[in-house]
Image 1 (tube, rainbow, N blue to C red):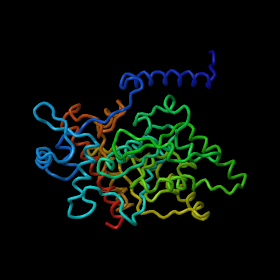
Image 2: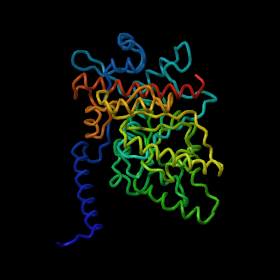
Image 3: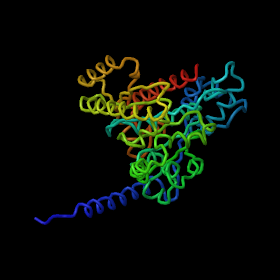
Image 4: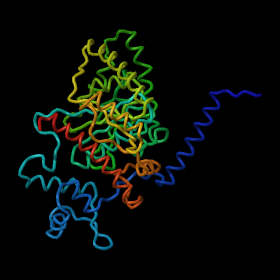
Length: 390
């Protein structure tokens, strides 16, 4: 039997797949077009703001605040910019500060949330994306950083690495050891108001390859400070940073953990995944202990495990969740991210559940999934506020 060279075969497959993905993107989004966020119903906006829909109608009739788009049946729709404008207006008349603009105040430190897991398929990128977007909708100024060379977070937000990032413009450019660029120069505005993106691509693997050489040369450059040092440049511009890490405990993840003020570990509640997480935690503890001895700051405001892709009717999964709660107590979030066809179907079109029109799904399927995500993200928001002493 004739044998094939694996490098040529894999290269051919990669080229064909890349071409097909580009065609898929062109079908979803015309050439040179950028993703745009849908408009939100007045009911959705009222829920986001914590007011009654009738109050939004009253503001509209009085000519106060942004003018919504009116569609068939008198339904009112608001853009994400409109939502932020409403927040700013309502905050001026609020009885207590932070009611509608809940971000940092004087003395509050930047919240840097690192989302990690050793095993792929745990819902890490899905969790990161929904968290970053919901915080932005809730009025926080958010910076999302894609530290994963596979760049799924970037692709989800409209950046196809092998096409859009050929000339750099990723987080690697800011953390590389030679001729790094200012972080501010690579930050990109997203189609979500309040959410900025620093994309990633395969260039990030260079950081994993270069770091051993730098360490061997005893140059005095500390790899674990790279991410934290660049965040200082833009610290005043944001309330929260969300970092999507690669599914491995390499130099990138360790640098992200050193920069973090909080850690979110995604866990799929199955035995093999929990066993993998156990090994991940052991390795993390050992390696970060070395980093701490070298001067790294390993103190966090909070660490939580979030159960993802959870199926309440699955007996073994329920047993695994109960086991985790008995082991880790309050470090496991009370709410879980449910496994849902709505979330996976939205992903097919490179969207999150906050982006898609809910009319694309049956009402029960959508509401079940969005309630799950909102509950998890709301719990994390509570931890952020608690870290600020509120």
